[in-house]
Length: 280
Image (tube, rainbow, N blue to C red; front, top):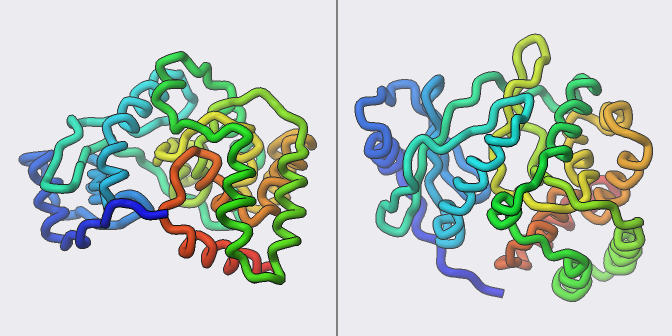
């Protein structure tokens, strides 16, 4: 599978120029440049985060994703959600937008309060998905996700892993269906911000939000440790989370569940194999 070519990576100065154009008059003296899978990000502490697309696909999707953020922010969640501060603006082949600043910081891997994590997971899964929000979320594959993996990914795994991953995939498919709910799709780590005393402040980066089994988000919160997740959710959600994660890591699974096309199967497989061999 192929996708549109990725533009050459912008320099730090180019990214700062985009941030300055979107937020004229704002000081960039403390700005920091980071990047995720879809965007370069200019972080301006206390002010905003400027997201700049890395690929044509993420540029085209940015307006829809910003509208989805606005809808999610209306849901009355008990934590902050970044909201667009500017229109999505094109700079040559790239799209960029400034979103509101969310304070706090990520917790170290393996740490976390089960009560707070449970509160977060319940809040996300209980969001009322309005027709408008449903239209704006990534289009899930439904049951087709398993076929995509079985036909496009598993055959490319090393021979020693194919039958085992196929077995794990069948176990995930065999889970009893549950009502779809809002799934953030990238919880844990730097995307969840906490106060110094462990209170939940905000959740960033809803780019992979879609409708599916909320056990996916529970599995993603294993960043804080599986024992913490076990204490944060009911036993059935915990069991389902472990089954989904066992296929080849829930983070990889979300890359298919949320409906995005697989544009780099070879790279996807390399990442999966690294995950499988890490715990072998």
